[in-house]
Length: 466
Image (cartoon, rainbow, N blue to C red; front, side):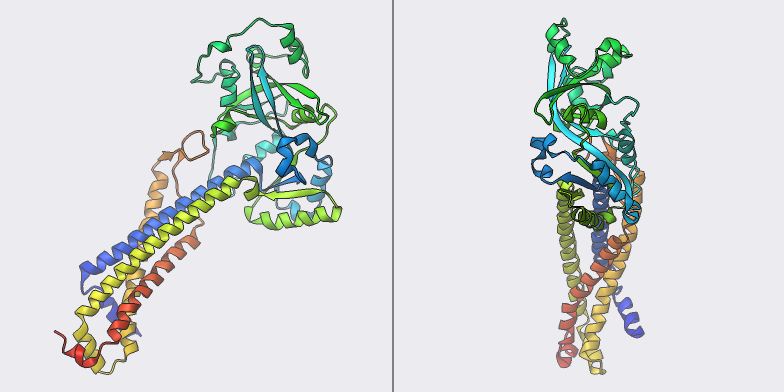
């Protein structure tokens, strides 16, 4: 076997140019697969981090809310959400896996800046400030990921304060109060004299501004939020925008409001309402998501609670779609690279067989069996694949490091501003081994057909070949 390996290693460099071209083709395939695979890994980790920051890994709803709740969120409130959270945290095995468990409220309504006679439908997320801020620090993959909204820290000192999308802030005339740039100057946004009608509507759910210790900027960033309560009656609360945060998607940016959970409760359920739309659960590790989900589903059955649990892929279908798309692209590229490697090795080994027909006849005449001849050429093909794949992995890793240090930026879908262009070059051992092993196997298989042809040559014909 040692002699066979030595002879094979010598033979692949009998024609150095052809062997180097074959090795180069395999190496380029390895580099392309490695870089795209690591880029895909970065995209997947980034998307996962973004959505886990926003929605957590799991969300508990009253049964039916996920399908119909957006039409009537007040009808699907969870009254015993505190008991549910306490029950889950009472299980030591579950508690150790939880990073944050928090109630939330999602609602729709109309936001108005009635001093400027502007209004806009809004979508609001009511969250507990401390829990919200903690969720934004989740970073399982060590990306040090900082989307534009992660620096929007909620304050727990005043429940009437929160954040809004840049789009809705501009639409409602808060540019000057929030010191936003690139704001269009619309004539319709000129202040008008206060009327009794405006004052009456603005005071439906808030105290008079005169009784509040607010700066002029805060007063100008005041909105009135109107929504329907569980009883069907309209309800209004005053809301003060501390900061406008870009959301990355125009439709969301033009309607998003982030408010304190307590204020959202008052708006949707009235001042005495103590319900939540959902309970979000953010885990330390994404790998624990499915087992955790099965465990709490069993807990709900044991307590006969009419609740359902949705995981990350159900809460954020775009995440599943994006991962599926990139997986398909990676598979397509892998097939192309494999075909290139296959035909390159087949061509190289076929030429080698044609050049060495006399040699094949000689060793066959000396007693080497057909299996020995075929094994010789298969090993040569394997060596070409091994050298090419190894060189490609090494070069690809170097290029990946250069890309990560280059400072390049790009604007991915769903982001409001450019982020560093990087590839995930840690924790990718399975990817590296898969690419290396796959190319070596492909080169070995590609060498089999020419090797079989060489072994089938008749000794007399081979010795007489010119």
